[in-house]
Image 1 (cartoon, rainbow, N blue to C red):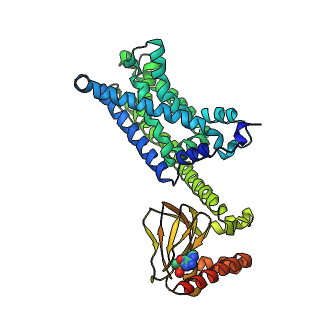
Image 2 (cartoon, helix red, strand yellow):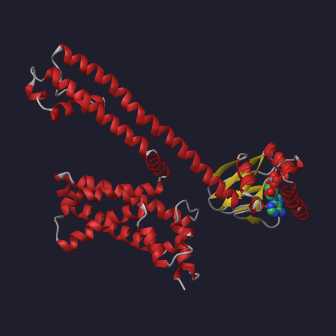
Image 3 (cartoon, rainbow, N blue to C red):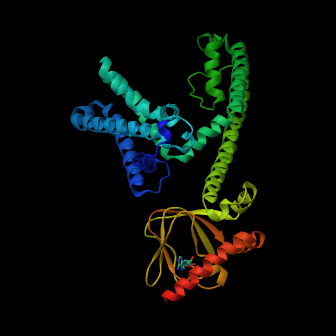
Length: 390
Ligand code: CMP
C-alpha cells in the first residue's frame, strides 16, 4: 500500500506548519525567519560583489552564506518529505507525490538556490561565478507573495496575446529599420549602413527608451523617427493593458477560490450545493484578526456575524469561557435578537473569518429555511447557557 495513505501525524503537523497561509504561530514564525534569511542572504551576496566590503566583512558574509545554505537545504528536504500530505497528492504514492512537488515552480526555485553550491563543492568551480545564481534566491520570496504568483498566472493566461505583441513588435521593428536604413544610409553609413544597426535603433525607439546614441540627421529620417516613436507608444500600451486586465481578473478569481474554500469548510453551508454556496459568497467578505484582538465587544451594537474558517476564538462568558474553532460561528445572537453583543469574543490565535452583515443574514435565512433553523437553534442554546451562567 502506498506510504501516502498511512497516517503520519508528525509529517502532517510539519506540513500544516510549513503550508502557505498557515495560521499556526510556529508556521508564521518560520515563514518570517525564512523571509528574513532570504533578504539577509541576498543583501550579503550584493555586498560581497563590492571588493572593499568583501575584504572587510569576508568572514561574516561567509557565515551568512553557510547558515542560509544549511537552512535552505533543510527547508527543501523537509518540504520534500511532507509533500505526500498535500490534499491533491492523496491518490498517489509518497514518492510520486514528492516528484510532483519537486517540479512545481517554487520547489524548482528552492532547488536552484542550493544546488549550485553543492555542484561547486563537488566540481571545484570558482564560487565567485556562482554569485549571479545565488541572487536567484530572491525569487524564493515568490512563495510568500500571492500577488507575484497571480502576476505569473496572468502572464501565463495571456501568453498567446503577449506572443502576438512580440510578433507585431518585430514586424514594426523590421519596417521602421528598413525605412530608416533607406533614408539615412548615405548620410550615416556607420550607424544605419546595415539592417541590424538600423534594427537596434528601431528597438530603442519603439520601446520608448531612446538612448540617443544613434539619431537621424536627414529631414526624411526625422520624419521616420517621429512616426516610429508614436507607433512605439501604442505598441507598449497593448501588452501593458493586456497584463493589467489579466492581473485584475486573476486576483478576482483568487479571492473567489479563497472565499469558496473558506465557505465550503463551514458545516452550515457544506450541505448546500455549489450554486447556493456561490450565492452565499456574494454576501460574505473575509476578515482576519490577530491573536489577542477583540472581534466583538460586549455591549456594543451588533451589525454582523462571523464564521470561523481558521484559528480559534474565545467567547468570554462569566463562569467558563467557550472556545470556537474552524467551521463554527458567533455574533448571531446580537443580530437575531436585535440586541447589543452579549459577550466579548477575542481571537486566541490568528483567526480568519467570513463576515455576514445583518441584512444579508436576514436575506439568507429567508431563502434557506434549514440554515435559518440551525442558526436559531444554536443561538437559543447559547442564550440559555449564558443565562444560566449570568
Ligand atoms: P453576540 O451576542 O452577537 O456576540 C457575542 C457572541 O458570543 C454571541 O453573539 C454568540 O455568538 C457568542 N456566545 C454567546 N454565548 C455563548 C455560549 N454560551 N457559547 C458559545 N458562544 C456564545
